[in-house]
Image 1 (cartoon, rainbow, N blue to C red):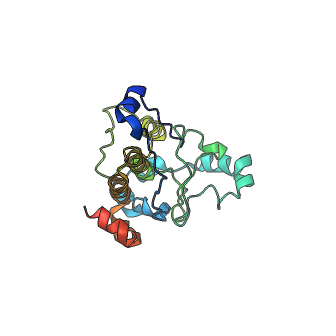
Image 2 (image 1 turned 135 degrees about the vertical axis):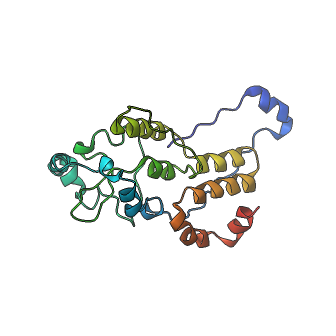
Image 3 (image 1 turned 90 degrees about the vertical axis):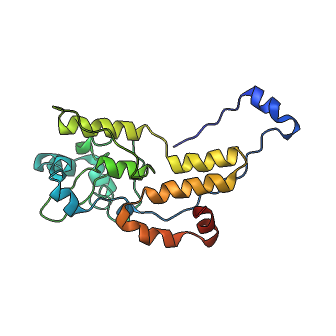
Length: 210
């Protein structure tokens, strides 16, 4: 993501001699990986929703014959293993699966890989689990529903990053960093938060507890 800031000239005039002071950014790295955003396989199975995100045999066969699959190393690069850093989410995620342009989640054998769920995409973008995703409309096909959510989230900005940027822009670095950390931790799957919170630096923890 690229972020552009525009400051109105009248706002600059109000600051007088102080002008605009944009501090050097410091965005804490929590070393998040794919495992930190995933929904549990058993939860998806019990909700009977996992198959709608999974590739069919025909889709998987076409994917394995694509140029990107062979160029990227197939199983290693296209699949989002638990210890990998996720690719940037784009608005057309999931619409060109067979071309190898969408990162997929591996499932236990003999199941085919699956797309990220909308909730996982929201977490990937830094939206906390309290963020309500639009529900599926009556009569709406499942693939139409989740592709609309993929497009919405793929066009979004990352709230934790925006919080840190806004704090720096307003000369409120600690406040922005605190808000960003809160959002980032709340975007981690509940079962993984106890493993992520200890990664906070002591100085970040004090801000996080404010």
